[in-house]
Image (cartoon, rainbow, N blue to C red; front, side, top):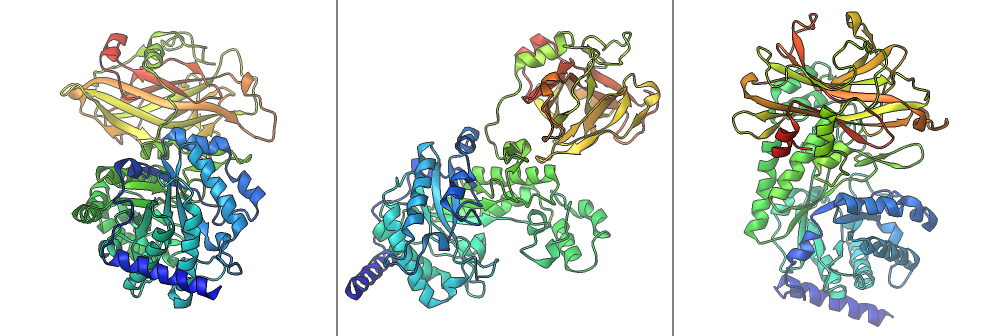
Length: 614
């Protein structure tokens, strides 16, 4: 027994020396096809890391439908964080928990069969004893390094039966070694050697120390093994991405609603609400840093240039924003800015995470995933199409599907859409998109139904270049309950509810509609450059109380969208002297499925020749 173990360690040493001295692995480089598998990923946390403790619970963690949705959204791979205790058993000869390793292999096969590649990530060396901020803490003990390297050699031997085009091996997530990052280098070399001996064709994911920072990655001397992908993590600026985090720096805990992008002017109004001390200093620093798309692109360009200089494949398999305290739209904007910077530099990525506190989805009372569509768009994912050119045309040419309750018959929009000022703002220099939710004139017998609203967008067609340009976009809507005939501008607070995905839902009735508008407020326009306007919003019916009977089939809610021109961005309403409507779209019934409701100032012929973005 001892002779076999000694021989194995000698072989590992030989492989290590070969790598250090320039002997190539069997796969000389990572092909374009293989690297493409790492282009768009998501971290599946709470499964093999901080997840169920038994196989039955692991089976139930993600349904087949959920995993298939990842494929449909356009993800190419998933990263599976694993706690070492799940797969390591120090009492066995090969250091493997055979039952759990076999289960993990079946999970990998399940994912590969539907087209998802997998990164196998040992995410922490110990959850029971190590510092929560130092997942690699046990590796600071040289005796444990020997165990860990031997474990990975045996683990890689089992993983070698998987398809190397679909399975990637990441020996250690976020190695720390804060005081001396160079300590990680020889350990990583030993891990590469152990894995390469037993899984010669599989690509290994390597990284720098200090939580896989880009700085320590760029300080690495690239390894001679060409079948590697170099990895870093990106959570900059931490003040924004980790506001409200309880597991990191103390100053972050009470931060909330810190905006992105930042500038001294944007941050200044927040400073007085933050007690003097580190939190205020850090938020001030964040503002002075002018964090925006250009700053992020410049920072990421640096690590991309390093990788290009050494002809290395580069990924970032963690980036994201702590969901509970960050502004919803700003979180999406940061995500889009980071994602586009990655893709511009051919950097594969994986968002952190799927359904935890950085999640792409939240879960309802029945544990069903609710996709954050604003975040999905920021990631450039494939969202189900809820709109079409035909629908847009019909929303301005057909009569209303139903008559809105309480709207006088002499109102020129009571029965059909109509154009107001259209493409001629005159002296008006501001704009806002809006919509209206009414009960139908024939009545609305549903009592347990709400209308969920999200993502109101407005575009204008430019006179100068004949291109469509985004005018405003707001995932959130604001609004109030107005008298159905708007007499006297009578209104009061509406029955609005914030939903788990960051959208809002409402009820209307009892003589009042719900008149809503982009929560981001009015935007400035150049009046003589407008050749067309297009507004769209998404809506569906949801239950008011999931514990009560579902009566959505009986619901009779109608919705229409429109827009107003205003004299400027701040002037108050003065009996239609300071604003006028652009146009009002068709009222259609809201259904349980997401639909797009539209308004445009262009004719069907004009739309067909130059369709707006949808």
